[in-house]
Length: 311
Ligand code: UDP
Image (cartoon, rainbow, N blue to C red; front, side):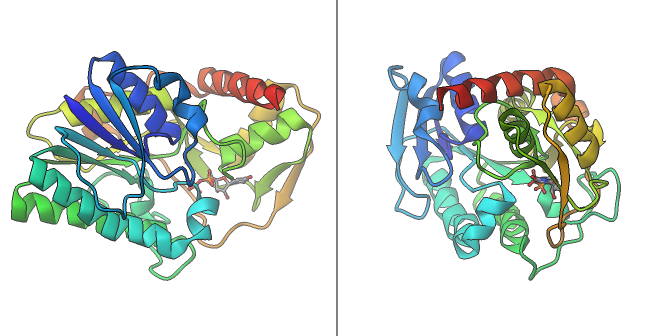
């Protein structure tokens, strides 16, 4: 198979490229390096089956490919809110361009959607039949509404042009290759703890998230791509829920850090609770996460230690 991975130099994208190469696929990795990094894929560049293309999803696209994983979009709230118009464009104009490519090439296309389509959810845990509670004009709307219209586009192309679509709703994911400064909670807490800086808990830290280790996420994405007669949307995430304050305490303990936990204002529209219902993924894909939070955090802490040591 020739597989296009957009956002392939990003955190999840790079792990996915690695995994596809291991299973014998040829990989075209597309990235504009706005949030992705060359470091994430530099070990793959000597592989003859790997091709790196520096391009934006908004540029004209033409590749001879059988499959597309669309992971091209900044996913950290701090990053996607820096350029809200760019975030909307990538999920609308970019999504249409990619769907047209999939249509021309008769390629199967998987969209990396998000738990943010549920917004600040009123249903808990969130299952795929919940339609969400999204503020259409708030600071997160460029991403939330962007990802919602991207799902609509996927299903419109599926219905109108018979494009072979797959939609995964990715919940909070963490692991090696997250950016040290991308602003997400796991990377922030670990880097702060390792550098002896204050650990910044937003609000009172009672909001919850459920964290999935990256190897589990990649496994789920590959299973969905390979599944026959199943489009999704399907939740992929780890249902083990934890408060942000407990996560801060855990990271402080696991790193043996002397950092203080400091409370900072809660960002607008920060979802109060989030936990995936993964019944559908279990049933349709035979998938569930294997790596628990302690094991995953240990590996992630080791990774950040090496990165920070290198300076
Ligand atoms: N958060 C925090 N401190 C940080 C970064 C994030 O307390 O330094 C909180 C944030 O307010 C949210 C949760 O951690 O409630 C997860 O934030 P993240 O940006 O990782 O992703 P989100 O799930 O909000 O998209």
